Amino acid sequence: MGELVKVYRMWSCPLSWRVELALKIKGIDSEIIDEDLKNKSDQLIKYNPIHKKIPVLVHDGKPVVESLVILEYIDEIWKGNALLPSDSYERAQARLWANFIDEKIFPATRKVGFSRGDDVEKAKEELDEVLEIFEKGIEGKRLFEGNKIGYLDIVALLVCFWIPVMQEALEREVLTREKFPRIYAWSDGLLGQPIIKENLPKREDFLAFYRVHFGRSS
Ligand SMILES: N[C@@H](CCC(=O)N[C@@H](CS)C(=O)NCC(=O)O)C(=O)O
Image (tube, rainbow, N blue to C red; front, side, top):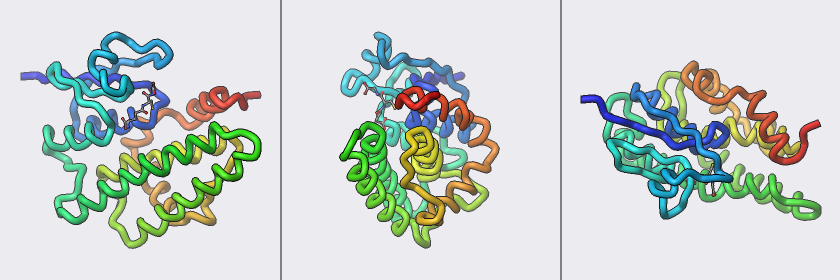
């Protein structure tokens, strides 16, 4: 029996890519519904009354919200091509760093984007600080190894793909190759994968979108 899977998303939302990529990796077809966040659909409000945010996965009529929760749900429901590590300790570590990305790195990056005047340098320092913790934290970790994309790889696209584009659009650079070689080594391996290249937005489109978003288009 075919299962109906829907994803409410926005093409430029890095949290939506997580869900779409996880479904691709699992080989699950889905209906994609693009949301306009300035005019949220009744369906989105109905399916995510708590946060009213994307992404939302709807599986057989039931909504699942919060991108990290959705990834775990997808991994539990469709067993092939496991996303989370099978070892309990490694699984705990993957969840810890995913949480760090969402709780620390994501807000610090947004702050760099939305700060003005004297606050810009302070915001950049804060982002630098959390990226340093991440760079040290991933030392010796089994991350993307050129053969299998897992849960933390998917979550880390926010660092590996979204931040480099954001900082270029903003003309505010914090994540440099020189200072963060481990993050870039991870990023180079990951972004070279066909499934990533085929399913992420094109870098130029994304860059143009964020330039307009931050008022920096020429
Ligand atoms: N913690 C949530 C965050 C979701 C989120 O912030 N989504 C943004 C788009 S990337 C959104 O829907 N924003 C609309 C709003 O805040 O009203 C997750 O991981 O799913």
